[in-house]
Length: 553
Image 1 (tube, rainbow, N blue to C red):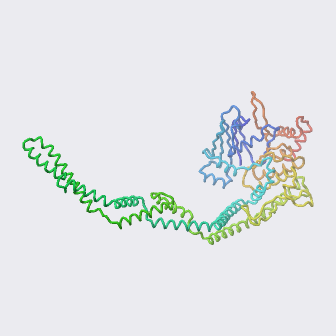
Image 2 (image 1 turned 30 degrees about the vertical axis):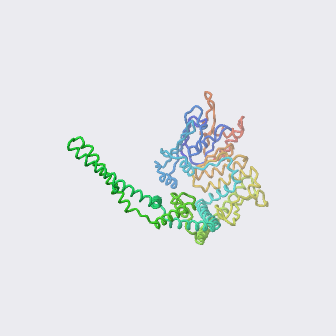
Image 3 (image 1 turned 90 degrees about the vertical axis):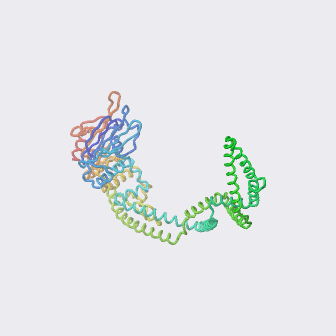
């Protein structure tokens, strides 16, 4: 239950602190005085959308704080604990800051939270019924939401929605795979063949490079042998070979060095050169021995190279990229997966449909019970709301294929006059009738709601006379079960309230500000009289106001 509301620099409110009681409280005042500002402030504190225009002109930021008594809200207390938002003394504090740039921050019990968390909390703390709420009654989705809310069927409805989506996902997958099975099988067969073909080639880049080198060597083996033999002959085997001449020169240098030591350095360098040349001769002889001039081996290597080149041409890649081509084929095969067992998929789909039908049928049965109860309750309310002889029905036309909402649609129908046929509410209800029916539905659904605080924002628009008094009694009855706040222009509704607040605005130093005053005694009589008589209030009007309040008491 809402216990306290603090408003700072919000629209035309400079500073306002309000304490709330249980029961039915009416908010009244002149048109434009700012009665709905209280509702807007609460919406902001509970995670509603905020913008810079809500910050009072000249102020840096707006601040709204709302305190709720949650001692009898076990479910909400559990939610607070799950969100790690500890509370003290069975109180929950919702706080919202909004600066002049439109940026905002939210807090629950002093801890920073997201707007989504604030909205989740707000949905459990209070319900607000707006003055245009009856217009949404024309929407099929809203009619279903109201019936399911009235019957407490939201958990089952959510389960039906989930099962339907699972069923449809399997169904669409089966249809798609059945349609694409042949094409998929053909693609998988081709890819499998290509994979086997490439794997049989046993190709890798390092082996390809070695194969190219082998083929080049074998193709030029004779020339290479001739080159090695020529080198050996020039260096060692010929009569005037390089090494023979160097050996002769080394002999003469040794003899000369015995007479002149300065020849020892050239001799040493020549001995080193002679040793290097001898190593070259050894290396060339070894090369001759291992060089294989084998035409068959050359032909084999050339065939291997040609196979690689042909495969690369087939797959339109360079030989070096054949490995990448194989990787792409393996990846695509993995994406296609193995053969799809359509029979197994059909079994899964059938089971999903059975699961959906089982829960959807339970939902339909529960809806029938709730629809009958709501129909009777709204029909009874119509008799007191200037629609005598009329009737209301929650129809449940079947949906042969079912849907996310169940096996039936939900349609509100009325017969405004005795003997008239039942027709859709969107086709036959006038604006005034729709407003009254909408109020009756809001009152009926609110009676079964778990939310402790209900706020009605001018929902009595278009209602007057004795009907307005009945509406006041309906709201007073709701107030006995919880906390009800109602913004109203009707004295008959306000007189039935247990508490009445007057909203007014005034200019101070050129600034328009709004304020709220708790009325009692003569001040309340005066306000009811104003609502009855307008600008000029007579003693007769005051007497009438006093009688209305006395009758309500």
